[in-house]
Length: 213
Image 1: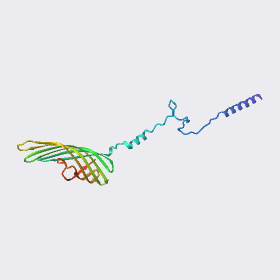
Image 2: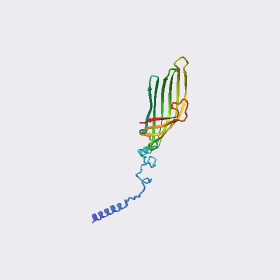
Image 3: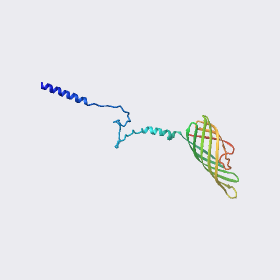
Image 4: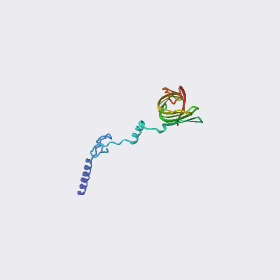
């Protein structure tokens, strides 16, 4: 009888003790401070999850990214040589295609001209820099503007007796034009608004051709 009573009280004690062990759970949001799964710093403050680097870079790229594929390279070159006349010219240009309606850039140039007649020989040198912009209101039409500053120095030497004359100075120009856009090439009718007497551009209207790659 005693072993039976002892077994009964033992089972009762175990069952009673098991009933006193309870786990209360409360549903909380993931960022609630009571959430035991949050990472905490040494001072007990909640550590915020780091921002994804790729997302930050993507957002920054939309504002500050430089697209190399939109760079455009061109050059104005000229070469004409004969017994009494020589003309050499080179003018590299670099532009950036901002969008389908606008391209802008800058360039430099150097021209050398020598002409000889029976009475004199003249030599001209030109070193210049320019800014330019092409605006495309529609696909095949372009409007063009190019402000530039040129430094020119020249000599005039008589073929007979006489003193050699020299001249030099800064010559500004402001060329505007309009015409056709053919791919990345342009054929425009241009005009120098300033019409300086020493301007390297022809007087009145003249045809201009440019190509970019």
